[in-house]
Image (cartoon, each protein chain N blue to C red):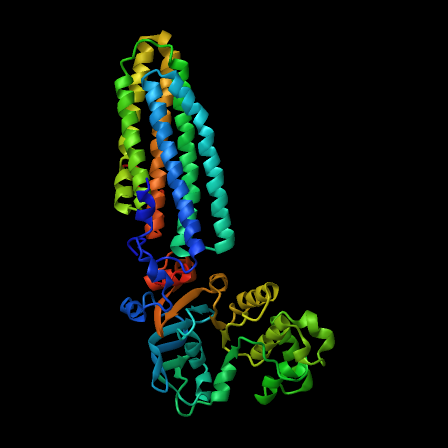
Length: 231
Length: 292
């Protein structure tokens, strides 16, 4: 089975339930993507108002996680799904955990943006931070797209980018350390930025997990922890 | 974002799902031979090229399948797919239907069970069967179990027969419930107890293979759980083939699962794989409750 090109269930209601689950995951994905975009923007543009907005919106993501979790439990209890339906429910339960954590990371960006908003001058390392942020945003977007289309090729392509993100994060970390050594008065602020870089890197990891779930859903193959360290 | 649902759920003609009968030709076109490994290393029974006709109608088409030693094999599929017909070939129960003709090779320990000089009564002692509806004889509980050993001359004395009856009832997990009323009629037991009595009757003649044709479909969940527990236990010493309409039951009790459709054996595989990641689309459609 190379794709999930399946006919509808005999039970219309079952169809609707699974469709509802999928729709809500995508809604949640959209919300999470928006939070990351806003969090990053607030951070890079010293926009504390937008940062506050990100902080205030996180509870929506948490609520969606609980709601989708409950829906999945109901489907498991009432329908005893098998094969691709079972894999869908299992991967959704995992996916929403990762999405919720991405939401938490976005919240961190928002929080730091509020505490750094008094800065007037854009530090030199912000170009690298923006670059990392844009890359992570693109990976998240591609991940959600691969999920929406159940596109294994896209998921594998996107998952491969996690290594690049890790390298960008490492190089940004080194840059931040050198700035801290140059100007110890800035250590507190730079540490905050360093946590944001870490949050972005973690978002990449969560996106990578979701890509792996897409492969599991479509092929029934668990590819987690199968890549060698060099990859 | 709305493209998500469109992409995930392929656009299907809404009339297709409401059609009365699925398009059989289209489904047959998807069948190009059995998927999965039909053979096992330690086969107890081995079937090759089995065709079954009822008069002019062909019910089973060229099925190859092994039943391994001490293996529980579940046979699933929609009504009329031939799974019961196939099961009944394994101890020649189909001989009782005049219009039924079985062709192909069916062997038990390498011996052809359809050979002209095969003693069918002996075959059915070696390959026992339990039916959908419990069918105890209108005799006492004791006599129900003792019947087989008596006609096959398996007990030399009354005490030996008593022993066989007790052991069989114990193995069927019924002993503790009937030990003090062995002279009561078997038909007076509850449905679940009757079915376990029939299983005790089957195992009293020390069969090598036990066939079960929807053994739990007339039972409540508790009685079903007891039979399933029994299948688990019996599977350690016997080869068991069970036909069931309950996919959860197949998933719970079997080591391997065979999916039949329109008289063809579509897919055979390890039960864990069949229920999480089947290979053939017809299998996927059936176990996920889709028909198209």
